[in-house]
Image 1 (spheres, rainbow over the protein chains, first blue to last red):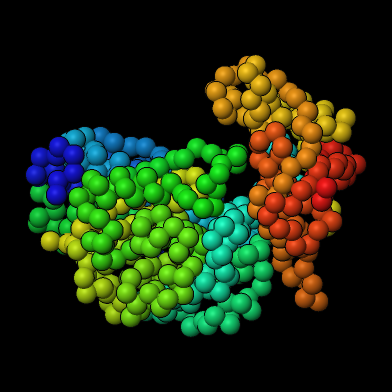
Image 2: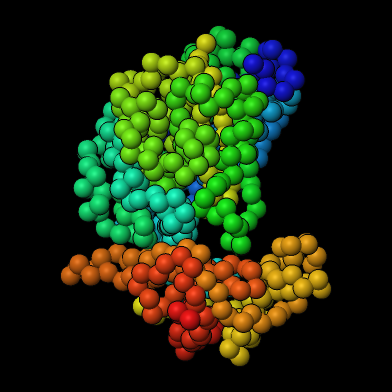
Length: 391
Length: 129
């Protein structure tokens, strides 16, 4: 399948993958982590930095990475350079943008880079995503009511799903438990100790219906991928992972009356676009890496991508379908819940490893089609990628 | 759990003038469509000549949560009930909900106002109607 009207030699592939240390460590800034990840991705590909002619930069919650990354990398005479921001959808959007740059001939080798350093010594993890200024204006009005950060807003979305479809906290717990099992097989994961449904139910409330084990981690780290053409990747060091399809969706109902709120997300449109471009259906997908800022996000995304029917996500999660040995290989690195939280780079990183067949003991035997999701804001921004098995 | 203080800025000045009078102001367009106070254009027809109009301040709970603070040394933690309220005019409003611990979808509610701190604007919250 050739996306768009690209000539065969300009089919986009992911040829390099970089991941720094991730988790709770201090002493390296977001910009330094981003630069390190970029260099790792270039080295992984077996390319020289001087061959990189495109750079897409994405900052996390600390906004610590910007265009000056090209200077930190010593990159000159770039054909493509930009900051991108669609929150949790940014990683997928960067790969899509880079792929369009490759197919059009705009650039020949594009780095997509993310870095974040929310964890600071002597400060709680929750402070990283809490209010940062004296509450003022519309945002301040929300803070005044106790609504700050993503937790309460996603909780309101999840509650709506529970009200409408009878979804239960125990069903959400199945997702947390399954992903922790996967994380135990991922050397990069922050949380590897097994958990049970009882542990999930016993974990403290964060924002009802979410308990602590429904919420993603907070991590410092950097990640990068290198996108180039299939032709250029032929003699590179790693198996090239084809980017078969991409799609985005931005429903545009940011905190206003929206009857689908919490029930149906933009992943429907984004997934349809990406799978359509790739010429596949959901039945063809071997491995799924879904953005999992909360257990609920996984559940509603499973429905919206079509892995189960609308409203059936809870029953599907509780059916034993998830986790190692289940019928759907989902968030095989432990995801953001148990692996690490580098926004959309978390599912993308695991997807590339799986597509290459390099995921160690958690490797899926079938990995011809890997679906990756990104989700930003509060279900406001969606990006989907379909990756092919490495040649 | 009480509400926190908030200050005004250019975008919210008219809104907080309203809350000081005991009014929850929304935006209306010349065709009579209602939009949320933050709207820069009509959410129904897109026009930008919006006026401020007072809501009746009544509505129903669309969804709710209770936000828990980090546990203190004695194990206790703050619990604040929040909700999405569908105002009877149509717009949704993200707000604090008081005098009810376990609301349910569809609960009828009405607006109330408080000044959380000496240097704060008057802020709206909701209680069961």
